[in-house]
Image (cartoon, rainbow, N blue to C red; front, side, top):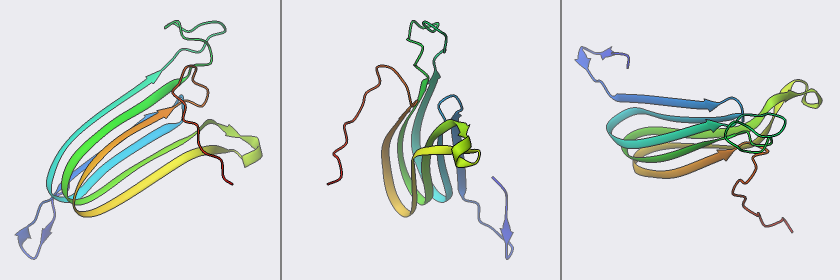
Length: 139
């Protein structure tokens, strides 16, 4: 946290930043609090990668399993918060001029007095046995 002096007074606020990446599945999570006068939080992040072999990985998981990033965020804040995640293809695509295909993204910026309760679960694109959500089609 940088120290700043303005007009001879010392006004230090809490700053906390967390960035977790699972390169194998292309998942990134960012949690950041700045200008916080009050910050009470609990963050639990788990990230796993499964071995990819021809038949079965070391954990006995079929070869198509890749990994997961899970986050459970709970916080009470007076200040500024930024919570974001992105899920993208870990391999660059030639059809996208070397860019990575993006599957999903969420960014939430908050200012004031608030509570955050979030559970974020990002599975690899081809994870076997993953919990799937059937979305309703657009009509």
